[in-house]
Image (cartoon, rainbow, N blue to C red; front, side, top):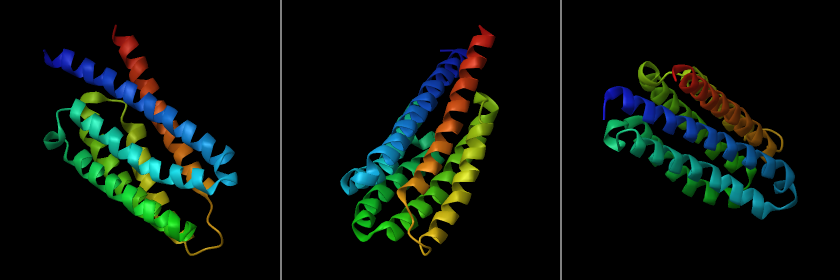
Length: 185
């Protein structure tokens, strides 16, 4: 496979991944606003599912993009998100302040790792500026979530806003890659 063919294949993969991640986040946000307020079980499942999905998405992306050894930031992100999934399963039993601390620490770490992945990809894949912004904003939002944990009644809807912004960034990146693919044909 030529380098140009390999880059085109990876661009198609990234587009699909980014659009899938946007769709997942949109569905997650909709459930967080529609079903979670009436059901603590749904809220707990959503909170555990979010970092688990991030771990899976990063693992699939790394595998498709040359393997874990070629993608250290994603390998670490898989480990961080998997550990967060376990920590979140414990935190949901302790209440929203614990959830906000776990989610916040995870948002900082995964955001910085996403930022590193996007910077590494920028030269060869393009359409990474939104992923750079997303990673940086995630890290910043995470610090606010940790701070909010000690404030008045943190709510799942605060975290859903974070997921909605992430969906927009993934959607922008996916659409930019699609536009670039069509322009080069």
